[in-house]
Structure formats: C-alpha cells, structure tokens
Image (cartoon, rainbow, N blue to C red; front, top):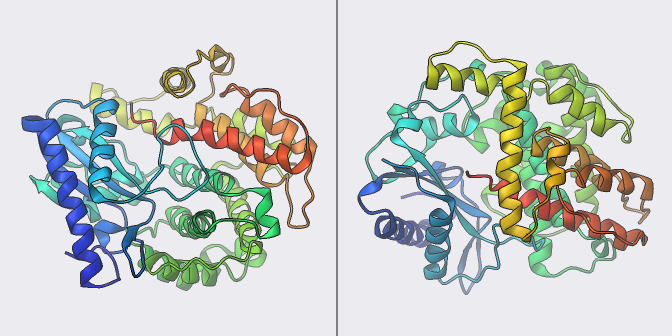
Length: 430
C-alpha cells in the first residue's frame, strides 16, 4: 500500500503501524467495530515521514475513524491510541491535554456510529472521508456518507481551519528561537507547522472558490492556475502566495527541517492576511485594529457560527427544516459545557467563568490568537498591551494565573496557556 512518496520500505513500516492499530481496535472494541477508515494525507499517499539512517518516523499523526454499532467513549479511544503507539516502538511525549511545543506523533482515533455516519453534517472531514478515505479494516461504509456538494460546505469550515493553524503557530514558537536557540525537535515543529499553515491557506481559498479537492498536490496546482483571477485583491497583497504553497506542498510530501526563523513571521503575516480576506469575503467582517478585533469578531461570528451545521443536523436527525439564532446560542452553550468537562480533566479545576461568556469556546480562543501572534516581532520587540488583551480574552475560557509582564517571558507564558487551552478544544471528541 502507498502511504507516502518515500518508497516501498517506508510504506511497509507504516503498513505495520496500521496493522497494530487495527489489532488494538479489534481487541478493545470487539463486535462493536464495523470498520476502520484511514483519512488525511496517508490515505491519499501524501503522508509525511522523516526518514533517517536509524528509523522511519511518522510526523504529526495518523487520522483514523472507528465506525461502530454503538458509541465509544473518548477514554477508550485514547487508550487504543496510546497502546498502539507504544507498540510502534517510537518515542513520543504526546499528551491529549498538555502541549510541550514539539512535534509529537500520536494516533488520532475518532468514532462515528453507523447511524451517525448516514447523517453527518456537510463538513470537509466527512467530504474527504467519502472521497479519499481508505478502508483499513472491515466494511466499506463510505457509501453511507451523504454525497454533499462543495456548495453545501459552509464557509465556517475554512475559517476554523485558518484559526486552528494560527493556533499551532503559537504553540510551536518560543522567543529564544529568535536567538537560534532550539533543539532539533523544536525546529522540526516550527517548520512543520509553517508547512501546515500554507497548506491550509490553499484549502480555505479553494473552499471559497468551490474548487476544493481532497489532495495537497492537486490543491496547490489548482490554486497556482487560478489564484490571480479568483482572488485578485489578495493577489495584489501577496502576489507570490501560490508559489509559496507549491513550495511548502513539496516539503509536506518530502520534509526537510532547515529553519530560518524569519519564515515563521512570514507565515504568520500571510495566514492572517488570508484570514482577514476570508472573513471579509465570507462574512463581510473587516477589522484592522488588533485591539478591537477580538470583541468585534466574536459579536459578528457567534451569531452565525453554528447555524449552517444546525440546519443539516436538525434536518437529518429530526426532519426539521430550520435553524435559529436561539438554537445557535444553545449549541454554543452546550459546547462550553463539553469543554468545561474536558478542562476539569486536564487541570483538575472547575472553571465556571467559562459560562459568563457563552460564545463557542473555539471563538473565544480564536479571538486571542492574533493578539498573541502579533505581540512579538523579529527584532525581538514584545508588545505588552496586545498580550494583556490576549490574557483578558483567554481568561474567558481558561484559568490563566497571574503572569509577570517580563517581555519575552511574558509572551512565552501567555503562549503556553493558550496552547494548553487550545489542546482540549482541538481534541473535543465528545
């Protein structure tokens, strides 16, 4: 089976890993397990691995869906993931609750039941499962997924992807990198998350133009051909964006980890310019003042953040053909409750302050991300006022302790708490 562009030996090693995951899932889930679907780059032969003389190291994660008759709780999914990873023989310090700013491999195992598979909302992940997922065990259940068109996928999807990638830029960076002080593993994380940001830019833009395809290579080629005509305003601002995406797509398929820290700042600037363009085109949202951005962003986006998903959910589950502002708000309250429970498991604290602002926890996090990203510069300047505003936003979703406002250390502390707050949201499986 072909999982990467690295040849037969690498593909055989990944196949060994996949078989271990299959056995762990079968042993744990028994007759409840119907199918295992590999998704993402590996399923398309576009997976990323690091090949050294000593070993073959998968980068980031294996994305797998366990399709079952009855629901499987998150604890069981994580147990399968951890057990399988140990049997691979790979060193990793990955945690589902705490970030350590490094590239740590993990098995991202998620669950869908047969009944829910037939009723999934029009999201990119389900579109990709149907059109490019690979069955690694059991029945081919992909045909059960609704055959959504690209026009059915709401623009909230691209927005989420862009903010998630910005969050990873925060997670992977430390101010001492400005002095070229980083380990190899830290450098690898920075390079890989820069790559992921540019790939996500292509993904989001092609969702806007309705030319999205489930392939890194094809997306880069399509954007290269259409960028100037489809996105003329953005082209004037970042004329070489499509070329950068071609470059970083090639690095995704066959990674190398040479780092000039200037590229982190370049990626930060590019992804936020694209995000602002995306928000304006998709939601008529515009704001250039960083300090005004968070509250204005939340007020605008929370009104419509879940509406599109709710319409499909209600139609499929209850045969009701509507969505409403009240239901949108109720859904966000529910997601805050789920996040509240996950945060309790991660920190041991009941953080009731979450419910003072019932905006979706992701939107609360996203509103802080640009403030953190742009509060530090290549010339080592740290903008305390932006960080103070970020802490205020972050405090609405996470128990941030008092932090000494000590320039670079202040930035690092705020970024750490952001990354730790983002981790439970990133793995919000319940």
